[in-house]
Amino acid sequence: MIDLKDVVKIYRTGGEELMALKHVSLHIAEGEFTSIMGPSGSGKSTMMNILGLLDRFDEGRYYLNQQDVSHLTSNESARVRNKEIGFVFQSFNLMPRMSLLDNVALPMVYSGISAKERKERALTALSKVGLADRVTHRPNAISGGQKQRVAIARAIVNEPAVLMADEPTGNLDSKTTLEIMKIFQDLNTAGTTVVMVTHEPEVAQYTKRIVSFKDGEIIDDQPVADRKTL
Ligand SMILES: Nc1ncnc2c1ncn2[C@@H]1O[C@H](COP(=O)(O)OP(=O)(O)O)[C@@H](O)[C@H]1O
Ligand SMILES: [Mg+2]
Image (cartoon, rainbow, N blue to C red; front, side):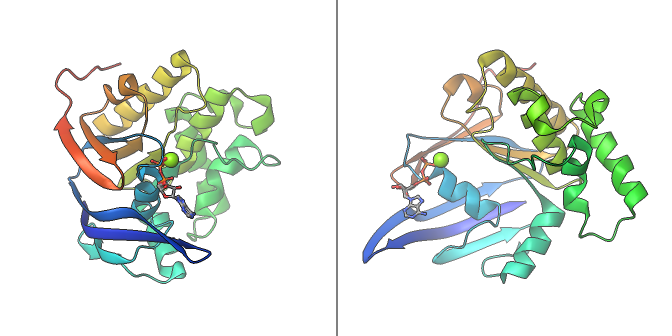
């Protein structure tokens, strides 16, 4: 599913060079539920943005579903991303003027699906996250946890092979965090591969595998022994 080989990422700012990923290799098989942990500045978001084809890297290779996606043009990576990857951000990134239904339908606008089917699929995705009764609301009329559920619905509406999330519960209280983790667990049980960044050890206990970063390197990679289920 995900095969990252010897990836180096260097940020260059005003003559300064910072190696944010130092020859990182990682394999994630279909059906896994992995959390990426590590202190602030250790390279978690850099890693996630590369996995999500949101950023480029300097050395190494990235294979997604056997396809070499190391050096795609931005159009090509947008196309692969739209088809294979659902991405959830800490800050939800919803369109404030659009209804929840239109927010969720947005990733389908470029995939040649009829308006009627887009609506049906968006409704199905919103049902999966328990928000079928809120479809006409705007994002500012719902809670943070509900916003993140909408963002998850938007991320899964194209039925991606892998769902990626960078600190998806970072802005949420502990009760809402568990609601989000339950949705991820249910999606994973239904077959979606999930990769998420978290800095909270308790949250990682709901996943199946913990990959730990420090200073741009993977320093540990362990299955979760007594995984908690919701
Ligand atoms: N756009 C950027 N330009 C320059 N340096 C960056 C950029 N993004 C991140 N960094 C640096 O790269 C390192 C890793 O950052 P990041 O991946 O955001 O870590 P984490 O998500 O684990 O907190 C940090 O030292 C950070 O300051
Ligand atoms: Mg980060």
